[in-house]
Image (tube, rainbow, N blue to C red):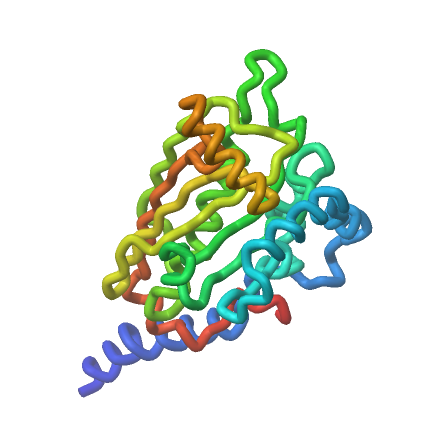
Length: 256
């Protein structure tokens, strides 16, 4: 009896006590008071001219459609993490990515050619290789990976997961800079703890008139139109089985 009790203590009680103690001290984000945000707000300044073009495009496209919701990248990242977030701390700059990427989620994706989410952003001169005039692909890959995850995570049972695989194909070496771009994402497949998302990177036409003229010009000349994808991506997301046991634990809260 004593031996059985000893094994219960060694194999059940002590590990359980250690796990509970560890969870009680979990703190994924550092204390706000210990961080320096003195230069943080300057990174969030956006190019007003680009924002004006984006506003015109969104007004033409959605026209107060209630089936869409808008959010910005910086709103989705806990402030404590933003100092170490590459998209905010490194790429947010007037000559890199000069606006806070805007995410538009379509509540009824069937109305929008099954596009679940669209992400709008703008590339600057510092993301262009001055030697061969090609665009640095690292920044684009980072954006595509993050947006594909944001698209697919809500479809998983506990709204969280990990990237199992990521495939990116660039159709053009010279992705245009000083140009508003959109990343259109779709749900290719969702089954249980697995979700496959894909996306296309496109140039943005500001008005319906420009879209019509571009389409006619493309047919007449045989040149690529602005609706021709610049890049494509596919991401396989999975939710590990053990995630369901910690659904109650909000480790990503910025209130720690």
